[in-house]
Length: 131
Image 1 (spheres, rainbow, N blue to C red):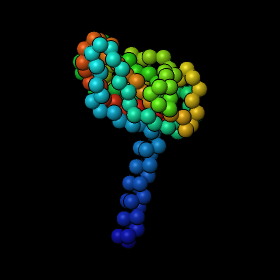
Image 2 (cartoon, helix red, strand yellow):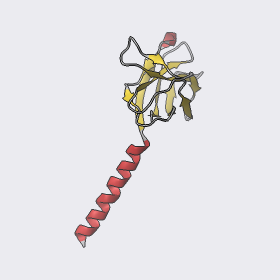
Image 3 (cartoon, helix red, strand yellow):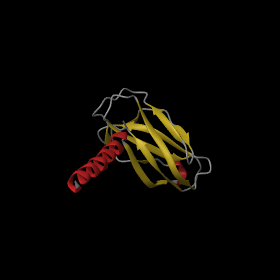
């Protein structure tokens, strides 16, 4: 009986873990929003779907009274990286769908760019689902 309960508990834990991972939300913590309107970028990720959008949720932001801009980028390296969406201004607590303006299929390289909308240094944290 104890083994059966342990198996059920383990299955429940693994199911919950799989559900969280399937959602695809990847956290980013304390990314710099540089003064001088300089860009910063997340790491490169591979798209897992053919959906032509990604989700971004800002969970914390400081030093950005006018919000921060976020956009999608693709490319194999820094020399051919380019934006593949419009720029979306966001504030703390906001969740937004960022639509791609260039077709990118599953397996394509994607990352998110960001910059402060004020000429000052700030920080931002959140979760992004590159899909």
